[in-house]
Image (cartoon, rainbow, N blue to C red):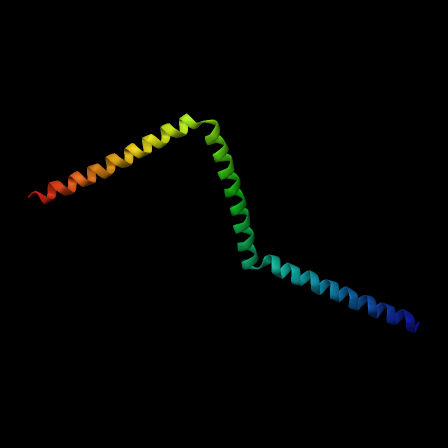
Length: 93
């Protein structure tokens, strides 16, 4: 009878220890820091994958990428040129 009580007490202590470890793990997973780190990791991985996919697409379609690049460069040049002209017109007065 005494052995049964000691065994039960030992099992209860083991169960408490296991429950304590489970609660610690849950607290960690629910903490804001853990959630932020997890979200950052997912974002980083998806961004790396998207860049890899975009790079592959650009290699397959180089003329399209060149056309877009030239259009953007032209728009940037025209915007800068327009700003420069507007400033010099005000200075002439």
